[in-house]
Length: 64
Image (tube, rainbow, N blue to C red; front, side, top):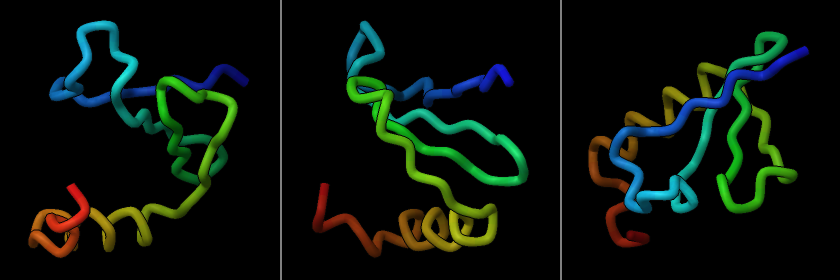
């Protein structure tokens, strides 16, 4: 199965090595770092949406 990884247009590095990539496969959302593509985190749409809602609300701003 060919996984189609996507990254944000807001990635800071011109080479694309400074970003997170996301994909969907088998009903799961996959997340990896572009500079360490062998490590993949699997989650669900519901959990990703909860995280994104918190990020948009500023809940993790102290980590950036």
